[in-house]
Structures are given as C-alpha cells and as structure tokens.
Amino acid sequence: MPSMAGASRPTDVDRRARGPRVRPIGPTGFSVTDLVERFQRKLQAEERSPCTVKQYGHIARTFLAFAQKPLSEVTGTDLEAYREYLVLQRHYAKNSLYTTIRGLACLFRSYGLATADTLEPPRRPERLPRYLTEEEVHRLLGAVAASPRDSAIVHVLAFAGLRVGELCRLKVEDIEFERNILHVRSGKGDKDREVVLEDRSRAAIDRYLSERASGGASSARLFPVGPVTVERLIRRASASAGIPRRVTPHMLRHTLATTLLSHGCDIRYIQKLLGHASVATTQIYTHVDTQALRDAYQRAKPQY
Image 1 (cartoon, rainbow, N blue to C red):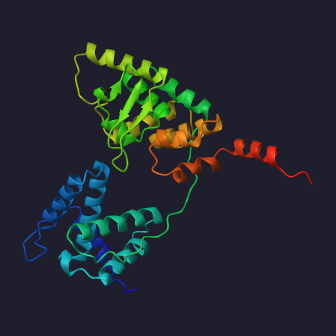
Image 2: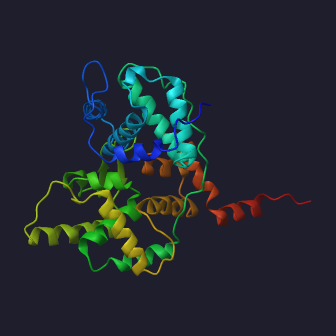
Image 3: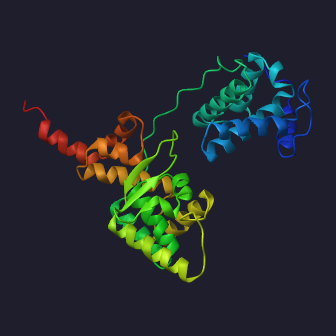
C-alpha cells in the first residue's frame, strides 16, 4: 500500500475541507462544488433518501479535497492511499469506512468511471442492537407527557418503529384515521409500507393536531422538524426519565422489535412492520431476547 506524502497533508486537507470548492478540477472547468452538486442531483433523480444524498455529497467533497486532481485522473493507487489515510490518520471505524467506500463507488459510477469498483469495503461488525426495557419506555413517555408534540413523536417512534427520517417525512395525509394506519412513504430502499397506528399513539396524535390547529399552525408535514431536533428531544426526555444510557430514536425501533418478539409476535410480521427487505435482517432480534432463548432452551434441552 502506498505511503502518505508529507506529514502536513492531512492538516491541509482538513483546513481546505471547511471552505468552498471553487478550484477547477477537470478539462470541462467543473469546480469541486459543481461536480458534487451534479452528483447529488443524480442521487436525487434516483430517489435516494435525503440522508444518503447529504452523506454521499460530504464523502465526495472530502475525497476530492484529498485527491487534488480531476475525477477522471484518479487511480486505484490514489484510492488506496485515501483508504490508508482514513484508517491511519483519521482512525475511521469499519462502519464509517464501509459507508465511505460505498459512497466513492457510487460517485465514480455516476460519472461513468469504474476506478473504485475494485476498492473492497471492510466487513462490518455485527453488533447486537441496543434497546430499552418496557419500564424505561414507560418512563420516557411520562417524561414528554406535558408536550403534545413531543408526546406524539415519542409514541410514534415507540409503537410504530419508524426510522427518524421516516418520522420527519410523514405528512398528515399519510394517516388513515378510519383504519388507524400510517402510510410510510419512500422508506429505506425506496419502499412504501403500512404500519398499525396503536390506540395510544392515535390519541397522542389527535391531541397534538388539535393543539396545533387551535394555535393556528399549519403544515403538510405531521411533524415539521428535522432528525437533529428529534434526537435532542429523545436525549432530553431520557435524561428526565432517569435513564443513564445514551438513548437515540433508533433505540426505540430496536425496542419495539425486541418487545414484540418477546411477546410472541411472528418474526415475519416484525419484518414487515420494520420494512426490512429480508427476514435475515430481522433475525438479529432473536439474539437479543435472552429470556426467550432461555425458555426455548429449557423446553428443548436434552435429558441426559
């Protein structure tokens, strides 16, 4: 693997990464900004999620600042040098490196280049999902009870298992009040799905919408907030609930799946609820529920 050229280079790259990209990088005169914006427009045209568009744009920008050459002149050696830089200088974890390599492969392919096709992403570690106990979720819901909006958000996360991006994209028209169904549009993998709107979640949404209407506020989106706002809300609520661990919106999704499984719900229904493309993804929750594992072992253990 090639060595890095010059000890000051990472510092220079990091400093350039904070400024606008206006330097031409190819014979057509595109600047880095132009190239990245065109790349992101292509991703949007492919109906990639806003999170992916933003993340891949950042990956492209950071790499081009490192490469200091037109995309068409980048070689496999340059990519290996960048990989080495991310691991040794930036101390990227395997998950971050995996996402970066996927983003770079997408960048090169979008411009008709196969340069990154041979760059292998690392195998991501399989970690067990973190989740809350049912008692902790009860306390979390109590911590947001005074705020109709916050209560509705936490109820939907806890009982419907939505990803935070899916929650933020929900529109009022996505609620089918007659059937108590939530229509999740363009979830991960650009898939639509329906989830059950549990009675307490429906009551929390009704309360929130009533308060919003009485205040004169109007929005097509059910919750006109971004993912960062939701993450901060969950952090504050978990602190108020006395939960010592770091709690994220995604933990509530894991919690729902784990709880449903422990209560005997068929894993195929959990797969459909969460919007997993394969039941193999959902099966990780079978390793989380240690009580169910203990019970199954007691029923099936050999009688030597």
